[in-house]
Length: 452
Ligand code: UD1
Ligand code: MG
Image (cartoon, rainbow, N blue to C red):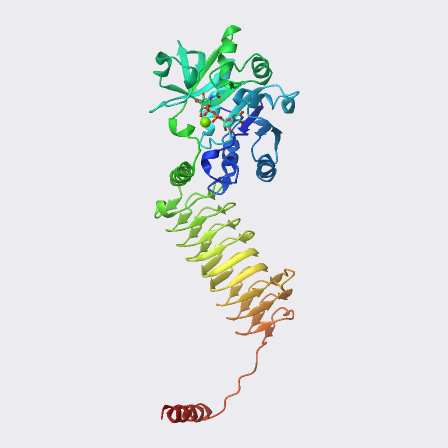
């Protein structure tokens, strides 16, 4: 059900992440091409997000730069000292000044919360003042325990502060919480650090709510969604889980994956219905493949758009800005970068096409290169419709070739070719009768002499 009230997000990302053994802040480690922090933000993509605040601390400069790049709609606030999750959320108070509506608290290192789960939490707010996301833990370990009775959450106890009886509870706290923003900050202002860790616990919020006669409830999700990433092995596992989910979703949505386990997705890969993906294809970020297009084996795609009916590969590389129209053919060992290839055009073998425009129905012969870089600047090549570029043509940009023009094989094209013209730009062939035999005889004689 769509959510009526715009929501605020508060993403906690100030922690150190010592166990990552890395100079990079933990939340910036990538899963499928995006920092895990971005995955956390994207888990709210089905909510109507009015404001998003990321709480930074360790590695704040780098985290803030990444937020600016990947999620410019979010603002950042600093938590200079990490005094606990409750204290972290309090740092977002000023940034949410004037905001009215539900606030959702997420963790920057918990990338797998699914959008329908947050939807369910939003819906639960119609019947509760505080909603906590819980899960039945196979191994409850050191998670906070949710103490629930008759569908009401009485309190959350942290492992360190729990009694034996409380530790026996397997319903655990994921950390995700939703509550009206105004109420959240009011309740947080009441919490203290009088506990086993000496921290301001966000988890004290439900108990503060019940003390006021308000209601806290639990929404349950699958344990897999709550997976946190704290170490390199967990990061590797998270990437693996992401791939499994992305493959399953693509198949579910009508894409053919010939060998699903060999296809690598980015966090934002979009594959249309009936798109056909052969084995060993890598999708880096920013790829859209439309309905009915085919990506053949061992191709690598990034930042590109492949239209209906196009066929790419095997062994093709599409780099950022490759824009393929319908029924285009890109064949083996071809690299396309920042180039628009119009309908039905073909670049089938061993070519580099960069910073270029190719008109509809144009054919690029094997080995053709757009020489786009002079060592300092990049220049464009423009080729019209139904042109025929002979094999091994060097197109020295900036240069243009008109509609229905032709270039002779092996030409080095340095000047514009008019519409319908044939450009020949290579040394003329000169046949010397009998000279090959004479030459070989002479060389063999030299070798024979040396051999003695
Ligand atoms: C927290 C919960 C626990 C829950 C568990 C789920 C509290 C008190 N406990 O425990 O009930 O079962 O998560 O994983 O909330 N952070 C800050 N600033 C701080 C402290 C933490 O930004 O001052 C961030 C961390 O970077 C991390 C998140 O908050 O992303 C959770 O903090 P963490 O220290 O991992 O909490 P847990 O002890 O695991
Ligand atoms: Mg933790």
